[in-house]
Length: 300
Length: 237
Image (cartoon, rainbow over all chains, first blue to last red; front, top):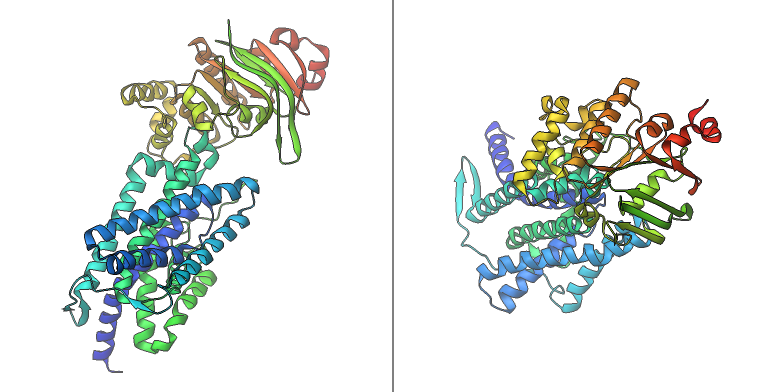
């Protein structure tokens, strides 16, 4: 490999990595915000992405609705679905038995339900493609080739993340979410309605998943198993420290870039291994993740 | 004075462990009432039942004449019953300022919230110096002040204080109790849970003693201080 090729690959790897990484970052953010406020890893996050993708596909292709209706409708549907799942199912499970394991199993259950539902409706029986939302044109950035769609994906993802961080840091509801994450008992004692905050957190997580779905669907073939993209989100979350929102974002971009480097420098067949190698490296070298706080011992 | 808080036959449990059985007590408006007892007697459970963090199995809790035993916890706070929890239950990664502002979470009168904020900082000048500091880095005494300040930001009518002296030096205990006295003189009604019976009996006007989740003894604090069994068991002389 000559030095010119190495440079070319580095540029291409970073460019493509940032684009796909921005979607991983969104999914990681959706996972971490739930984990931070309820300490439940949501194993249905991938299926929430998948289901939102199919909602968009259905509205756009089978109902011929214009894009400016399809996008907000998909996001709203995902928000409402996730918030209702939290309220109707998880609240009930939590009340019946305090063990967090049951909550995790309930999220696994939701993932099967969503996948089964998409298969049942017949949309998921063949791989489908999402119609191109904008005419893809190639653009050169340095020596890296990207498309206009790529730029739209990256820009949108970054804007969504910025809006989310602003909400989390500066609004009253965002502060209440942080309070619940730090100390749910104290949050209740100052009058935070836990049920409501949990619903909003799940709703936001569903909405972010839907945005990730809208961004990624035009680039991949859609199947009922496309939720497996969540592996990358979990990898990003673990690399970032699992309780850190900025960590989730950095982790997402890192995983995207690593994945592209592996594909370019090693072999495209090794790509599937990249996230797992990244997870193991992080767990061995820095178990708390890049941005994870000090390990705190909780008084039980 | 009419009773601001009234518990009648309140029972509560954590899973299979019966924590409270048939506890009745009342807190007259404007008073300080103490709830004493050893570790695990049910003092904190009583406060958590009032704050609606623990479900009430039977019995009634009335605040200002209205039943609150099946209300949601945030409604109770809205009504003016605010707890200062035991230990260090601050929002660790928030600044002192954010912690205090969280105390006013349910209030919709930003102008008087700001006035209360200033008033509380006048009470606790230490907190004013540390407004931007992370709450988790405060000392034990400062965290206790922050907890009381946070509760006051909700504009309580009844303050539930859980072990305010726990883990503090004698000087700080004196300071905190001096402050509790002052709040009471300013008109705040207080239900005080304490293991430190000596200081609690000298601050309160009436006291209840819990044993194994049941009321064992009650009376005017002055008289309990001279009661032989109380002296032997709780005052250690």
